[in-house]
Amino acid sequence: MKDRSILVAHGTDKTRIVLKNALREAGYHYISTAQNGRQIFGRLERGEYDLLITAPELSDITCWQLLRVVATGAFCSPRLPMLIVCDAGQTPLIEPLAREHHAGLLALDELGTLAASVRACLDGLKKPAVLVIEDHPDTARLIESSLKAGFEVEIAPSGEIGLGAWRERQHPLILLDLMLPGIRGPEVLERILAEKPDQIVAIITARSERKTHQSLMLAGAAAFLTKPINLQKLPYFCEKLLHDGVFLSQRAQFEPQNQAARRVIEHVQIANYLLETGQTGLAASQIKHALAQKLESPMRDDEWIQLLSQLDYHGRCT
View 1: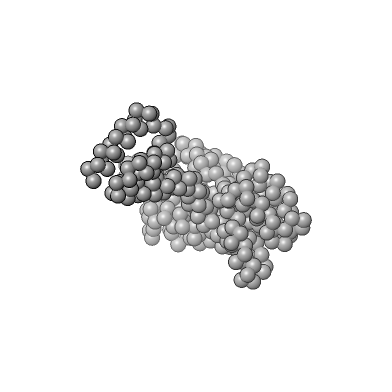
View 2 (view 1 turned 90 degrees about the vertical axis):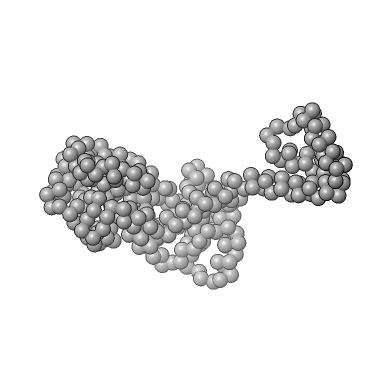
C-alpha cells in the first residue's frame, strides 16, 4: 500500500487537505495535489500515478473531460483508475458517467469509506503482461522502467528463455529484439506465431532497412520499435498495440463462423440458379450442403423428404 502514488485534484483548498489527511490515515503516503486541469496535466507528464481522485468540476475542466483525456493515453495510462468525489446530491447525476467509464464514485459525507473506495479502484485495475525478449541488460531495464506503471513486465535475456516464458504465461504483448543469442528474433517470431497466429509481437531493432521490415511484417510482426527507443512514448505505443490486438483476437475468434456463413451463401446462390433452370435434384444437393453448414444437427429423413417435395413442386411450377 505504501508505494501507491495518488494524485488528488480539487478546487477547494479545505477539501484537498481533508482528502490528503484521510489518505495518509489510511496508509497512503505518496500523495500529490492539484487544483485545476492544467496542474493535473503537468503532474501526469512528470510522474506516474496509480490513482487520480478528482471533483466533478474544476475551474478549467470537468471530470467527463478528464475521463476522456485519460482514455486517450496521451498523458498517462488509459487504464489509470479514477475516483470522483462529490456532494451527496450530485451522485445520482454522476453515477451513470462513472459507471460508463469504470470510475469510482464517493460522496464527500462518506469519507469514512474512502480507504475502501481507493482500494476497490486500485484492485480493479489489472495490469496487462508484457514480455520483453532483450539480451542487452541496460535496454531491458530502461524498457521495464518506462512500462512498470501500467504493465506487468517480464524480461527474458534470450530467445530460448523468452519462448519458455511465453508458453507458460501467454503474455498478450511481446517486445522482441532481433539480435538475440542462440535463437534469433526472426525464428522466435516464427515459432510463436505458428502456435498462436493472433499473438501481438513488436520487433525491437536498430536496423532500418526496408526489406528487413517488409519481411518481418509479412512474417506476422505487428509493429517496430526503432532503437534508441522513445521511452516517453513507449507506454502509449504498447497500449495502442493491445487495443488493436483485441480486434484481431475477436476477428480470429469469429473467422470460422464467417467462413461457414460464406459457404452457406455460396450453396444457396447455386441452388437458386439450379431451381430457376429446373434442375431440382442438383438444387436439393446444394441446399443439403448449405443446411449441413448451418444446422447444429443433421435433418431427419422426414424433414428432408418434405424439403425435396417442395423443391420438386417449385421446379414443376417454374
